[in-house]
Image (cartoon, rainbow, N blue to C red; front, side, top):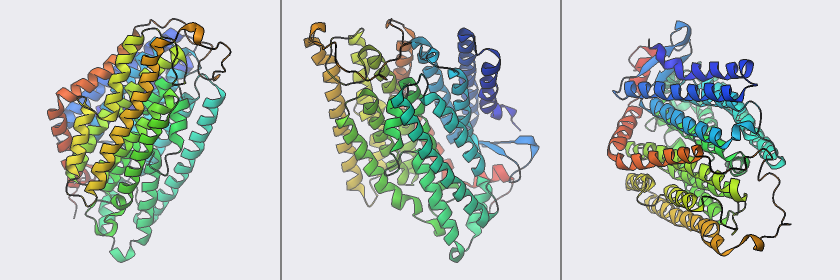
Length: 517
């Protein structure tokens, strides 16, 4: 048993309480321990990704209790990829937060940050549906604390809405788990797959109810129409560096859909055939269009990028809803791109907001305007999926995967029109922020103009020339460029991951130690 497998969960689980109990009054020490933990997490994730790349599925049995009776963590290509993506994003966001001073605008930021990582990574590694719920709750609690970090009325209202909506999702999750347990007598994912396959079609009504409830829960986490209402306000009003970390949270919902509906409720399973794809595909296409329209109509920086993230999720879930190896391959490649692109643009939006407020209006030229304009332009074309950044390649993979689908023309048209509308919205925002600003002087700005009280914090630094925030932005940009240059190896890894997902026998055998019927 590889004890290294539990390290990404245990490390933040230990560092978080240590920061609270030992160094909470020393900002520099909190930063040192938080940053060191995140760097170590990246190193651990790289080792695990290298181990998973061979195709071997590793299982860690907590307390040496074998499945399905004990709690297990499972490492395969998909979970390794998501853990590595999370740890890299966390390191970049941590650097940005430290460099911009966001961590000193409220209490316990770094401890909550570690608990958030514990919840996200645990969700990716767990092999048990109930513990997936547990890790969902861990990341929900930590994310609420991070959302309202530094305070503000608007931020608190959005945080309450976020918590209420996700608690409703958690309640539905418990109902779904209870239903599945009543039918199958287990919640271990591998054991569920075996028992669900043995249930006669005529006795599957209650099982289908549980499967539908699970899909609704994961759709809430992934912000799918009509269950997306929490995301625009939550992400737009959260501290934007935190929203950059939250870019991976919607992917937890997409990951859960992939995991459960290829392993337990596979597309070839007669009693749940077409259950996910029939509803998910039209919902994903509508999500994509609503997100694009939201980008076009946004008048605040946070909402602009939040709706861009919704558009990306619509594209990603469209690819997942195909439920074919080609569709999942495209979805996995696009997952990496969309996470990096959304996080990158959230950080750039924070650079803009710190200099001239949350409104997208023409104002006098901000400090470092030229550099930030280049970053915004690059982030805009990345999030919209325009060439030459990796999003263009990801969308090509999605379009190619949909060629044989019955709704191919709807899929192609929605993705292409959505990209056009998104880039128009980004171009409108960019022209107001960086082009028209050159024609405005300080004297033309009304000093009595009423600005939102939550746009800035009183503790915000007045010096905008810190280099570390730009280092973090360029690190994410480098990741997007690398994903473009190495699109071949990345797509090959995604293809191998998709093949592993659609051949779940190896996963089940690794967890249960037996060959499936």
